[in-house]
Image (tube, rainbow, N blue to C red):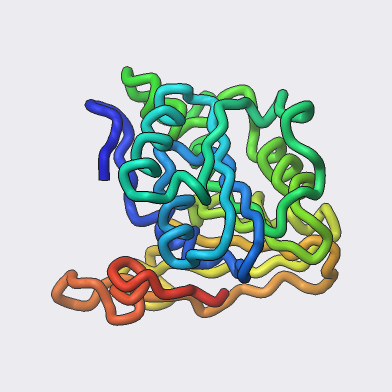
Length: 231
């Protein structure tokens, strides 16, 4: 996959994010913070009869995402829009999407050591928009009964679940364990169902690597075979 030279490269996070979206034929999905389009294009590859819109405030990444979609024959079903979620109200209709997915910056503003590369810095550390802003925007964009799915740092699980649950949604958290179930997770998928009430559920999650550092069969099915992931 093409990427911005010297800039952000997609890891496995957006692939697992796309795999976890419970989309069906004809659905419209919004990918917030789409970057170069890894999650959107992964979902469009898994499901050939859905329509996806990607949104990102980095114009250079949007241009690259459009190029990748064109090269892969997906431009008819996947479009990318340069916009800022804090100011996108006039360009996006509320409750217009069946599902929303997001891979926001994982570090709070002012934390860590920002990369001198502005693309990397924007991808990793929150800017003007906080995690609360991301959650509010995503829930505003999804229809009643639709899902909002985030991939985020495991150590921000409590904060993310609290923000989603405060909107009166049922929340499921799905840890991605590196080698041993129950140990050392760095990433987690968190999915809310708008309008559905209920207690937060912490799923068993998935173990990514075997003892020899190869991917487990379950992880391989998602990363190589475009399998769906049911949270």
